[in-house]
Image (cartoon, rainbow, N blue to C red; front, top):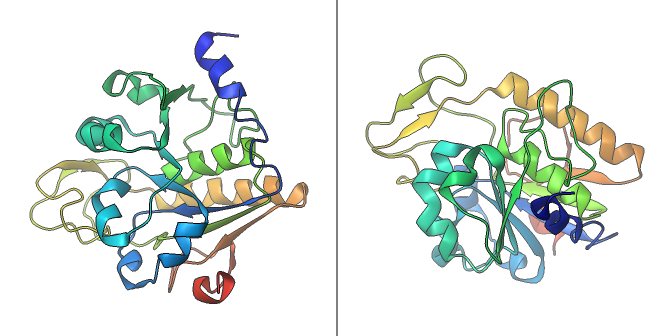
Length: 229
């Protein structure tokens, strides 16, 4: 086992049987009371650092896999006092250190990896990679918020586009404003989510979607305020 993979082994079942909140980056976060997250184990994604001063919570873990995103956000990611899981395709933009761990990226036919030391499958969305991280750490319940699952964009899935003006698809208008981003692939994302749900539920674990008015119908829905009240 390489040194990088050996480092990942220490996270196996670290939070066995516990609950995590996976915070995606949709604009619905702006309509939520996020104060309960101060008491939860939070996994943030990508450019979550752009909202932390306003949201007033801090993630324990952050996952990012897209090389373009990691290149754009490396200063913000490096400033976080959080463990960072970075997909190997983006490794050159954020070297390993005490807080940064590189994760191998698996190709088909892998859909959902149960072993982070082997790698994870991106599955068209960083959220899917983060679910594999949560699985490896043993969480029995993962509550997802900020997964609006709706985007305003032109062009084909995965096509790179330059965003003119404010970003309407994320919690911050500056998220991709004046930058290049990759169009989402919602169909592929949903297929990945369905596999994640299958794997979790086969072991008596569950993934819940607490996104207000979220458009994804793969996971069981829950009311975030009531769930954490």
